[in-house]
Image (cartoon, rainbow, N blue to C red):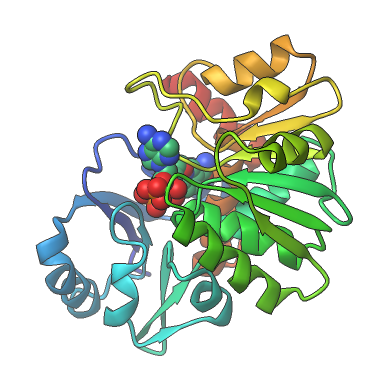
Length: 281
Ligand code: NAP
């Protein structure tokens, strides 16, 4: 008898993760025997956790905050897209070696195309954030042919680095950085087709908001990758302004779908997975 596929996720904290639900639903749909465990791994134990994955013959692992960047040095190989993004969210075992991938860019771009009906090719975009998820989204937008990407981040140096990296990937894409409260920021938001929140703002803590979002209007598609049981403040505000909206659950589902395909070669039943996630909120 074939042994069940051993999968899991490492992060810290990890209690909130929805990944076990997604992969269990997908495995049941295909009749695949699978165990998917959530492991709380403190940063100081990351290298030992990766050794454990290797020696215990775990077949695949998702990686979440705060390990997406730090994990790269412990892997045998990291694929080109994950290297450009600078973060790994999925580990596969190939001929015994641990290989790092990043499925967040695919997840976001697929949610844009399939769930909002918008192809980023030729579009003007504003991305808030320059952390791990924002890096995947900006690189994904550049690779998908976005014409202009404006990056807005609290720590401006990270935005500048990301803008430079995106142009390396897609020289035809124009990237720029806009700081808070500048005309450039207001002009960028007003003239954009797509506005994306890829910061942690909106998770509920602190009631912070993003600079420039008061310029959102009915011409915009507004995507918030933060997912929560109710609509985020940004999406509520965007709806009020008449904009179309896209929630972060779709990105989560499509990045999971790409990981599942890497591990099993099979597709995700996306509607069933979404239904299962929504019922858990
Ligand atoms: P990260 O690497 O820690 O980056 C966090 C980002 O948020 C940085 O740009 C940071 O700015 C910014 N930020 C944090 N607090 C802020 C504040 N008070 N004001 C302004 N900016 C603030 O985290 P990440 O992995 O990119 O994740 C970001 C968010 O995306 C999280 O909510 C995560 O749950 C969500 N996410 C969703 C998906 C999905 O599939 N839907 C996938 C990945 C992540 P600085 O650079 O200035 O610190």
